[in-house]
Image 1 (tube, rainbow, N blue to C red):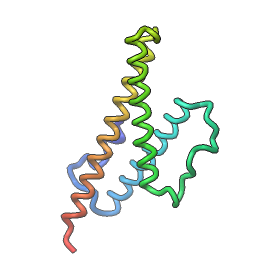
Image 2: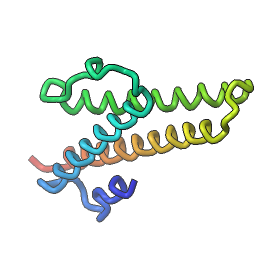
Image 3: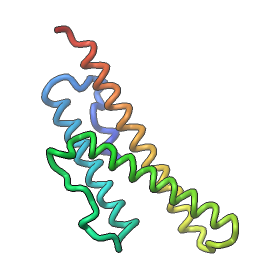
Length: 128
């Protein structure tokens, strides 16, 4: 989480080559974490079903897959909470871990959105 908070931490913006490098590094972190979460949640899934990353997918594809991963994590946490309330799941630690995982994923998504919005606003303020 410290890597997310450290990007652009000096109050500056994303103007310049350093800002682009920070955005690309943040994008790569999102992709890496999304892949790890997908492996943890679906270890039996065949590798051929995952979309190929590359120029065809691009940033929009990576962002969509990251958002889908966070959505799946939240959905799983909701299902485990409901199952616990109904008495189907006995392990409260499993339920709490899923809730925390969903919360951290949402918080990371919110931070990425804030950084992208800030970058967009900085670009729009630039003189031509």
